[in-house]
Length: 211
Image (cartoon, rainbow, N blue to C red):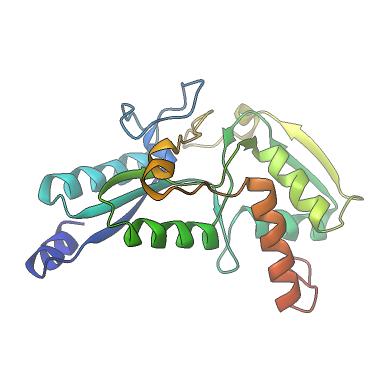
C-alpha cells in the first residue's frame, strides 16, 4: 500500500482501495458503521486493517471501500464451491451461525463508479443490501441452479475446526454510501438471481460448477 500511495501522490491520483468486513470482530448486533472500532480476529483481517492504516496515514486522496462475501464470474468463490460440491457429492453441510451480506462483484464495480463520479473521498461500506447466513446463501444458490434434490444441512462454525476464526456477524451499514450517491444497493437475493441468469446465459445454461 505504501508504494502505491507514493506513486499516486506524486501524480495527484485518487486511490481506490478495497478492504473487508473482517476488520471487525463480529460481536455487534447491528450493522457496522464506517466509524465503528475495528478489532480483527484473524490474520487476514489484521493485514487488511494494516493496509487501511497506511493509506489513511499517507494520504487523504482515497476511496476506501469495505465489502464482504464477494462472488463473481471469475475465480473461485463460495458460489462456485457450492455448485461444484453439490454436483460431485449431492450433499452439503454449511455453517448457519455466521451472518453477512453476499455481494456481487458487478454491483460492487458499479457502486465504485458511482463514488468516483461523485468525487467521494474517505471510507465507505458497500455490499448488496440485506444479510443472511452462509447456509441461507447456499440454499439460494441451489434454488437458482434447480438443484433442489441436493441435501443441504446446517452446521455450527465450531464443527469446522478451522485455525482462523471468523466473525459471527459482519454486516456493514451503508447509510454513508446512500447519502453520498443517492443510490441504494440491490438486495442480495435479487443481485444473485440477476448474476446467475447472466452467467447461465453466457455459458449455454451451464453456470460455474454445473458443467
